Image (cartoon, rainbow, N blue to C red; front, side):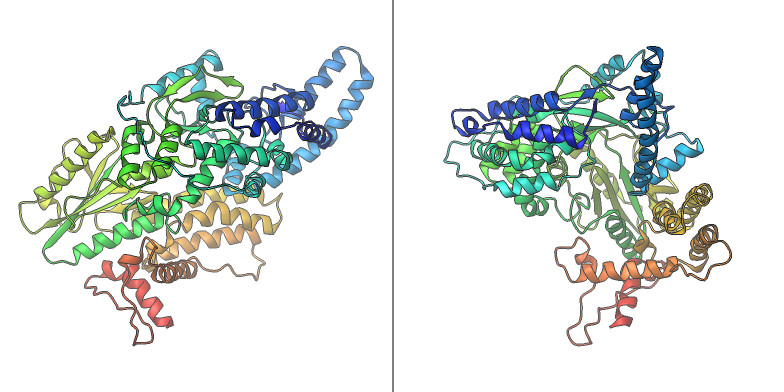
Length: 639
């Protein structure tokens, strides 16, 4: 749908909404569903009556800077030419000429806003395929058939649900919290304007233009929802967009992302912000996703620290690590388990009722372009794309813990990695016990392990003799965990070679763009597309050997030569210096904050010896070169 959002049209829209009398909606006689429906219908009517709109079909052959408005005007120009209306034809031609210039400028500004946009633009200009849904749609006769087939496929994943899980509370329920209208206003104004609109089909820009008009009535609806512990049905309708996981994706290789109404996202954000600490405290100490001051870097540092520390024990011959892949975990987790988990974590009863209302009677449509599928009921799972979904899933994931404290589990969203030390004996059945324990947990939580994508790796020299064979899980010599390759000998050679290949291919973007972009823009392209690859999880490689470190520096020198040619006196800060700086900053920040996810693995700080940290004992080179011992040396040298 193309909306003509010129200032004059938006001014007419604002005037139409401003003239609405919302007094009746403040009455308690209206149900929240009725209030939401009236609010939505009123805004939609004002938009349709004041904002010109038209359905425009874009194709893959359109240039990247092509806009729906530009395509519409070109179609109108062609219609004027066929009708011999040359006055209109000349007017449109002049307007199109000016619009092409502004569209190209706007496109150039937008692609420089993020590394993702830059890289997609380079791929488009060089003819590289972006893969994904367009190729998948070729299997269907039209988009309408495709969206219904995809929706049917997604619904097969849903658990049938538990009809007896309904949570009820008979006591008095005080208001959880109150939302102020000014907070609603600022939440609308601070919402990113580039976000896709949800099932309400109203552009974010229009909501922002009338935020001052609707913030009071929206605040009233929010507070009514909190008071009544009810989530409006209109806000539980999702338009699902399908994100391909791989190129040439099949119907089983898509990630469904729910596009929800703006008001739903805002209300969820108020709920989560008010109870953020309670949610995060219930995640457990092994969940590294969906929390502040955490990242994949922290997760991998924690796992690598456990492995290297275990191998320091002379009684440990290796560490057997199982990496599990769960099939559609976010869609399969049952609502009854989520409600039970909220109850077990002592969440307020009225919050449990509100979240129960949020989960039940949800409806989804698959949307591709202007094609929208028939509705389907969502009987399980949490909608990916919603604010509360990560928190609710993490509460369920937190119920898994290892059988033995000598083993370690690292969770990042729905990725589970279990590390078990192999003792100096032939009896290492505790590994099998942990595997069976995890399978039992997944079964109890209606989750399914994908054996084809789950792998096992054994760290340590000559540790294979002590390893246990895990049924249906293959043992590999190298494995990719959260974007980083681990080898059995804990060498980073494989990962560095992978990074070099990937970064070298991305240097082609600089070759393509060096004749059209200024130096400062080329540096931005390098930082976004190349250096981000070289520095991913850089604190993990704090003790990287000289050979691999030089390989990374060589890529930067090649990029420098492309950007600045040979006649340049500017100096790029070395990758090694940036890596050490990032690692020491992470160490300092984690050591000063007892809520940091890495706080418990760092050494204690002495109160006597100039505030130095206790150096962890390290007998092997791999342990010394791991994050905690190496960073401790660096930090102590600066104290």
